[in-house]
Length: 164
Image (tube, rainbow, N blue to C red):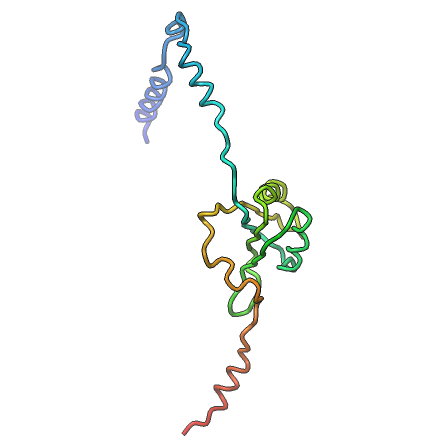
Protein backbone atom coordinates (compact mmCIF):
# COMPACT_ATOMS: atom_id res chain seq x y z
CA UNK A 1 0.00 0.00 0.00
CA UNK A 2 1.53 3.26 -1.10
CA UNK A 3 1.35 6.73 0.38
CA UNK A 4 -1.50 7.72 -1.95
CA UNK A 5 -3.65 4.77 -0.85
CA UNK A 6 -3.01 5.52 2.80
CA UNK A 7 -4.12 9.13 2.41
CA UNK A 8 -7.18 8.06 0.41
CA UNK A 9 -8.19 5.59 3.17
CA UNK A 10 -7.61 8.24 5.82
CA UNK A 11 -9.91 10.67 3.94
CA UNK A 12 -12.61 7.96 3.70
CA UNK A 13 -12.44 7.29 7.42
CA UNK A 14 -12.63 10.98 8.27
CA UNK A 15 -15.57 11.54 5.90
CA UNK A 16 -17.48 8.63 7.47
CA UNK A 17 -16.93 10.04 10.95
CA UNK A 18 -18.20 13.47 9.98
CA UNK A 19 -21.19 12.11 7.99
CA UNK A 20 -23.44 12.21 11.11
CA UNK A 21 -25.69 15.13 12.05
CA UNK A 22 -24.02 18.48 12.57
CA UNK A 23 -23.66 19.81 16.10
CA UNK A 24 -26.59 22.25 15.94
CA UNK A 25 -29.03 20.06 13.97
CA UNK A 26 -31.80 17.99 15.48
CA UNK A 27 -31.66 19.43 18.99
CA UNK A 28 -34.44 21.98 18.70
CA UNK A 29 -37.34 19.50 18.94
CA UNK A 30 -38.71 17.22 21.64
CA UNK A 31 -39.00 13.44 21.16
CA UNK A 32 -42.43 11.89 20.74
CA UNK A 33 -43.96 10.35 23.87
CA UNK A 34 -44.65 6.96 22.32
CA UNK A 35 -41.16 6.60 20.96
CA UNK A 36 -39.64 7.32 24.37
CA UNK A 37 -41.63 4.48 25.93
CA UNK A 38 -40.57 2.07 23.18
CA UNK A 39 -36.92 2.94 23.76
CA UNK A 40 -37.31 2.21 27.47
CA UNK A 41 -38.90 -1.16 26.72
CA UNK A 42 -36.06 -2.11 24.40
CA UNK A 43 -33.38 -1.17 26.93
CA UNK A 44 -34.68 -3.59 29.57
CA UNK A 45 -34.97 -6.98 27.88
CA UNK A 46 -35.81 -9.78 30.27
CA UNK A 47 -33.42 -12.69 30.36
CA UNK A 48 -35.06 -15.94 29.31
CA UNK A 49 -35.16 -18.41 32.16
CA UNK A 50 -32.50 -21.07 31.69
CA UNK A 51 -33.71 -24.66 31.94
CA UNK A 52 -30.30 -26.21 31.34
CA UNK A 53 -29.49 -28.89 33.89
CA UNK A 54 -26.49 -30.35 32.04
CA UNK A 55 -23.07 -28.71 32.39
CA UNK A 56 -19.96 -29.20 30.27
CA UNK A 57 -16.80 -29.42 32.37
CA UNK A 58 -13.48 -28.94 30.59
CA UNK A 59 -9.84 -29.16 31.69
CA UNK A 60 -10.54 -31.85 34.30
CA UNK A 61 -7.32 -32.70 36.18
CA UNK A 62 -5.91 -36.22 36.53
CA UNK A 63 -7.43 -38.05 39.49
CA UNK A 64 -10.68 -36.06 39.51
CA UNK A 65 -13.01 -38.65 38.01
CA UNK A 66 -16.67 -39.70 38.35
CA UNK A 67 -16.69 -40.54 42.07
CA UNK A 68 -14.69 -37.46 43.04
CA UNK A 69 -16.83 -35.19 40.83
CA UNK A 70 -20.00 -36.65 42.32
CA UNK A 71 -18.76 -35.94 45.84
CA UNK A 72 -17.42 -32.46 45.03
CA UNK A 73 -20.51 -31.15 43.21
CA UNK A 74 -22.88 -32.73 45.76
CA UNK A 75 -22.27 -29.67 47.98
CA UNK A 76 -24.24 -27.47 45.53
CA UNK A 77 -27.25 -29.74 45.13
CA UNK A 78 -28.50 -33.12 44.00
CA UNK A 79 -26.37 -34.56 41.19
CA UNK A 80 -28.29 -36.78 38.80
CA UNK A 81 -25.55 -38.18 36.53
CA UNK A 82 -21.83 -37.69 35.84
CA UNK A 83 -19.92 -38.69 32.72
CA UNK A 84 -16.21 -38.29 32.01
CA UNK A 85 -15.11 -38.80 28.40
CA UNK A 86 -12.62 -41.66 28.14
CA UNK A 87 -10.43 -43.29 25.52
CA UNK A 88 -12.11 -46.51 24.34
CA UNK A 89 -8.87 -48.41 24.06
CA UNK A 90 -7.05 -47.45 27.25
CA UNK A 91 -9.82 -46.04 29.44
CA UNK A 92 -7.82 -42.92 30.27
CA UNK A 93 -9.65 -39.64 30.76
CA UNK A 94 -9.92 -37.16 27.90
CA UNK A 95 -10.10 -34.39 30.53
CA UNK A 96 -13.64 -33.24 29.82
CA UNK A 97 -17.03 -34.44 30.92
CA UNK A 98 -20.65 -33.67 31.67
CA UNK A 99 -22.66 -33.43 34.87
CA UNK A 100 -26.42 -33.27 35.25
CA UNK A 101 -28.21 -31.68 38.20
CA UNK A 102 -31.78 -32.12 39.39
CA UNK A 103 -32.48 -28.35 39.43
CA UNK A 104 -31.69 -25.83 36.68
CA UNK A 105 -31.10 -23.16 39.35
CA UNK A 106 -28.36 -25.26 40.93
CA UNK A 107 -26.79 -25.85 37.51
CA UNK A 108 -26.76 -22.10 36.83
CA UNK A 109 -25.15 -21.38 40.20
CA UNK A 110 -22.47 -24.01 39.62
CA UNK A 111 -21.77 -22.68 36.11
CA UNK A 112 -21.40 -19.13 37.43
CA UNK A 113 -19.35 -19.89 40.54
CA UNK A 114 -17.12 -22.76 39.40
CA UNK A 115 -16.14 -21.45 35.95
CA UNK A 116 -12.38 -20.70 35.91
CA UNK A 117 -12.00 -22.43 39.30
CA UNK A 118 -8.42 -23.56 39.96
CA UNK A 119 -8.36 -27.24 40.91
CA UNK A 120 -5.12 -29.26 41.10
CA UNK A 121 -3.31 -26.67 38.96
CA UNK A 122 -6.00 -26.87 36.25
CA UNK A 123 -8.56 -24.15 35.55
CA UNK A 124 -11.99 -25.76 35.18
CA UNK A 125 -14.08 -24.53 32.27
CA UNK A 126 -17.78 -24.97 33.06
CA UNK A 127 -20.60 -24.01 30.70
CA UNK A 128 -24.30 -24.87 30.69
CA UNK A 129 -25.45 -26.99 27.75
CA UNK A 130 -28.89 -25.99 26.39
CA UNK A 131 -31.43 -28.85 26.45
CA UNK A 132 -31.73 -28.85 22.65
CA UNK A 133 -27.96 -29.37 22.30
CA UNK A 134 -27.78 -32.42 24.62
CA UNK A 135 -27.20 -35.51 22.47
CA UNK A 136 -29.62 -38.40 22.96
CA UNK A 137 -26.78 -40.88 23.58
CA UNK A 138 -24.81 -38.67 25.96
CA UNK A 139 -25.81 -40.69 29.03
CA UNK A 140 -25.66 -44.11 27.37
CA UNK A 141 -23.70 -46.56 29.54
CA UNK A 142 -23.10 -44.13 32.41
CA UNK A 143 -24.02 -46.59 35.16
CA UNK A 144 -21.85 -49.39 33.68
CA UNK A 145 -18.49 -47.76 34.21
CA UNK A 146 -15.47 -48.51 32.06
CA UNK A 147 -14.47 -52.11 31.42
CA UNK A 148 -11.13 -52.25 29.59
CA UNK A 149 -10.64 -54.72 26.77
CA UNK A 150 -8.08 -57.39 27.69
CA UNK A 151 -5.76 -56.98 24.71
CA UNK A 152 -3.26 -59.51 26.07
CA UNK A 153 -5.88 -62.28 26.19
CA UNK A 154 -7.03 -61.46 22.66
CA UNK A 155 -3.46 -61.57 21.36
CA UNK A 156 -2.73 -64.81 23.24
CA UNK A 157 -5.79 -66.43 21.69
CA UNK A 158 -4.79 -65.25 18.23
CA UNK A 159 -1.21 -66.57 18.55
CA UNK A 160 -2.20 -69.93 20.03
CA UNK A 161 -4.37 -70.88 17.05
CA UNK A 162 -3.21 -74.02 15.30
CA UNK A 163 -2.30 -73.32 11.69
CA UNK A 164 -3.14 -76.17 9.37
